[in-house]
Image (cartoon, rainbow, N blue to C red; front, side, top):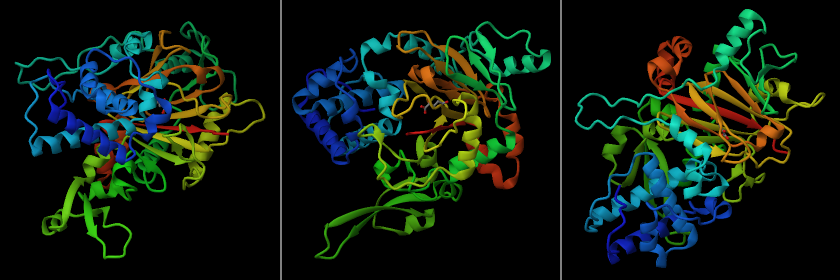
Length: 468
Ligand SMILES: O=C(O)CCC(=O)C(=O)O
């Protein structure tokens, strides 16, 4: 990455930065952050760049830049600081593109949630929650001399609660040896539902979804959920994208067409992204930018169903075009929510967020606090590779509990549990730990190759909410 704080604040680079930030602002990307974030104390690593850019930038842009750098570091995009290169046009374009991608990536990763409402600050780096995130996060051993494939750093998983084995031993021995602090809920549900004595409102239903159900929701999450009017992280940059999964299957490329309009038409230029095949692309001289569908699919981080969330206002925007939550998903959510619902009431699914995780991705500690009634649960469904879930307390300083989430597990968070920080520090994509053998068998048909390829290294989470 080309951002490295210049030792003596080069004028030209400063301008570059300003232009880049300006162009980000023009795209309205930062708006999502504006309402929810305030500029915070800077970390030693991000402070120099802010000092350097400070006279030119607004608080919001400074925050964004800071976040972009911190984020890039987290995602290992950054390189060790090196002397700033001279700003040639090529450097400028590459710099601008990089920042733009990172900022849009940040937006797509629900920045306010990654960092909670605390913003990025040194204190949050020292909290118990952050320490536990770091403990479980995926790191690679940094053996530069080795030519071998880089290996994930081993992590001690002995303290991670494993509800699958709790459930198996419960079914085998009927009750006797539940771990301390874990209880089985007395309810009519057709699978064992577990709760944690110290976390009222939190419920874990291991293997709640059959393998057929898991495959179905994986397919829907890839094919139909990212379809407009549902929004995804790609909307900010490319507008509404249709048929992403099929385009990736057909190896298509998204191309930005620059169309010159006739005099009298409102704008001089308009930009439009359209699918093209590689053949069409090679014959077209009018195109300015292109990106392959498979890269876009890999970069898909979230899509939203039902009522759409407006990240700039941190609230649901009922006036944004949307479809109702699909009936089958709604029925499933109602059934799954029942152990956490007040007697006689039925869960009303109104919105859902689908999160897509690739290896190395994490969802930082956050609260889901935008719904009106916290007594209603969030129904959270895991699909694909195994993950670690952290359930903290009401403060980031409370040490979180870690537990495995496998494909087919359901987590419910209602009432007091809604006030607890939670997040995903890690997913496992290696054959031994991903635990997706059943999915692999099910996706073994010729037509399913694309799903299999995707899910072998990914995790999907669908969390369904009653908003009002
Ligand atoms: O991926 C998960 O299991 C948790 C997702 C989550 O916490 C959220 O989307 O708010």
